[in-house]
Image 1 (cartoon, helix red, strand yellow):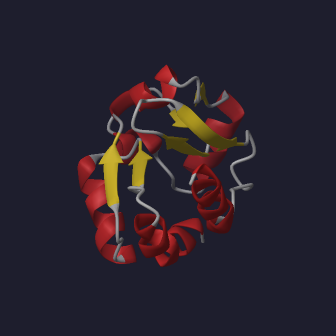
Image 2: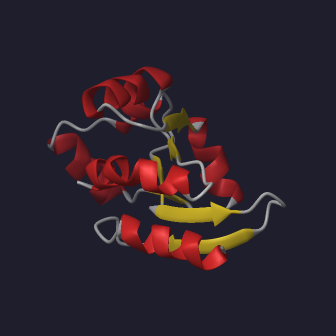
Length: 128
């Protein structure tokens, strides 16, 4: 799972002078539960209503058929995210430098395609 891989590479990312921060639309309580369960070595922040994702153009609204499928599997985003928007962020890995400039971005509309943490580490090393 991606969280496990990121967690395993958190120290290497930190050694390169970067700060790894996860942003999730989940409520603070759900994020705390994930952080405890996965023993995260980084912060996980809540993004209510996917406001940050929207600012970066990464928020989408789930189609009605997908919403029904999620509910059939017992996944209720209203509960997890604390709102009724049924929006999700596109999975993204972004490196923002100290001047606020995006220096690296890996984004894919397919939530199953996530960048390897090694790619992030390579990008950090290339920034020198």
